[in-house]
Amino acid sequence: MSTAPTSTAPTSTARAAGVLHVRCAPTLSGEGYREVLELLREFSPLVQALPPRAALVQVRGAQRYFGAGPARIAEVVRLRAVARLGTDVRIGVAATWAVASMASARIPGPGGVLAVPGEAVAGFLDPLPVEQLYGLGSRQAEALRRYGLHTVGALTHVPPGVVERILGKRAGRLAAERARGIDPRPVTPRDLPSSAAVRTGFTRQELDGPHARAELLGLVVRLGAQLRGRRQAARSLSLTLQFAGGTRWERSRRLAEPSAHDEDLRTLAYRLMDAAGLQRARLTGMVLRAEDLTAAEGVTRQLTLDPVRESRLTVEAAMDRANARFGPGTVRPASVAGPVRRGSDPVQHQPGRLRAQRGGLGLDQVELGLAGEPAGGVPVLDRPAARHRHAGRRRPDGQVQDGGPQGEAVAGALPARDLVAQGVGLGAQPGGALGEAQAEVLVRG
Image 1: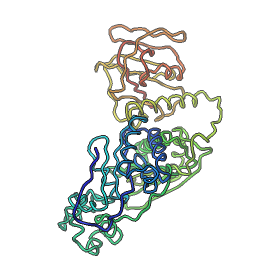
Image 2: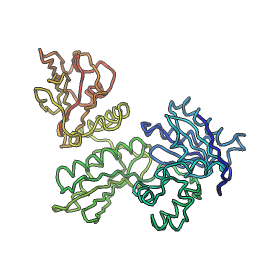
Image 3: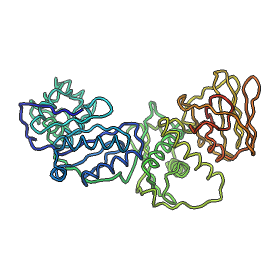
Image 4: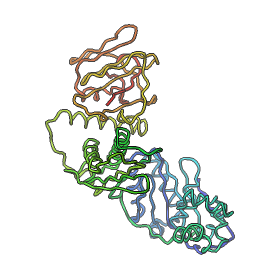
C-alpha cells in the first residue's frame, strides 16, 4: 500500500518529506530488529533506533544518490525487508518526526507505506482524533475533550496559549506545534540504547514479602530476555522502589562482570532489595534498570566447574528459544507464573529427574528439576501452543516406559543438559524422552 493524502490547506511545514518512521511487527525478535536496523543503514547513515520495534531514517541526502523520492525509497526498504529478512514493516514518510510517526501508525495490516507531503500535512492531521496526536497521553486527551477539542484540527483553531493553560506550558506548547505539523527535532544517529528498563505497578499497596520479590523476579526475567535479545550485557543494575505517598528509593550497584544471565541479574537485584531495609513499607511500583550496557560479543565468559550453573545457562538458552518461537512468557519462573493447572495426581518434584504423567485434564505434566535450584529460579512452560508430541524411546543413561492406564513414564537420573538437548517440552523436534502424549513443563520453584 502506498498512498499520499492531499490537501488544499497549506502548512508551515511545506517542505520536502525526507523522514521515514519504520515500525516493525510487535512479535519481531531482538535479533530481527537488529537486522532491520542494519538494512536501514544501507540507505542512509542517519538511522536512529527507537526500541523496542521502531526506527527513524533521514533520507533527504540519499534521494539524489538513489535517484528516487522518499516514498519510492520507503517502498524499496519494505521490499528488501520482506525479501531478505522475511518481515514486513510499516513506513510513514513525512517532513518531520512526529508526522511520520503518526503516518506509520495509521497504516492498517502488517505492512505498507503512507507518504504525507508537506502540503498535505493539514489534510492528514485535521481529521485525526485528538488522542492520536503524537506525544499526547490519555489524560491529556481527556482534558482537551472536556473543553470541546475532539480533533487535532480543532487544536489548530485555538490559540497556543489556551492549550498551554489546559495542559501546562511545555505540554501545551508541544501539542499546539505538533497539531500544526511542526517538530524541529532532527534524526540523530543512534544504535540500541546504553540502558534498558522494565517496570511494574501494583494494583494494591504491597509490603516487602514473597509477592514483591516474585514481581522483582518477573522484572529480572523480562530484563534478561530483553538484553539477550539485543545481544547486550549490563555492567550495573539500578532498582527504584515507589512507595505510597509518592516517595521513591533508588540504589545502583555494579555487577562483578558484564552479564545478561537471569541468575546474575537476580542475585544483584535481590541484594538491592535487601539494601532498602524495608519494614512494612507500602510499595506501589518497581523499576529495574540495566545500565552501562555493552555488546555481548565483547563479554568474556569465565569458565566454571559448577555443574548447577552450567545447567542453568543451558536451560536459559532453551527458554529463550521457546519464548522466541511461541511468544514472550511461554517459559518463565514458576513463582511468577500464577496458579498451575494440575491433574488428578500431583506431580512429584525430584531434583535431577524427569517425571511425566497424564492427569485428569488429559495433558501430560512434566517436571524438570535441577539439583540445588533455588525457589523461583526454575522454568515453567504452560502455554498450550508450545505442547508437542514426543515418541518414547530407550536411552543408555535412563529408560523411558509406559506406566499403565495413567500413561505414566519416568526417566532415570538424566543431566539437565541432556533433557534440554532432547527437547523435553521446550519446542524441539519430536524424538524427546517422553511417551506418546502432550508435554507441559510444570516445574515449581
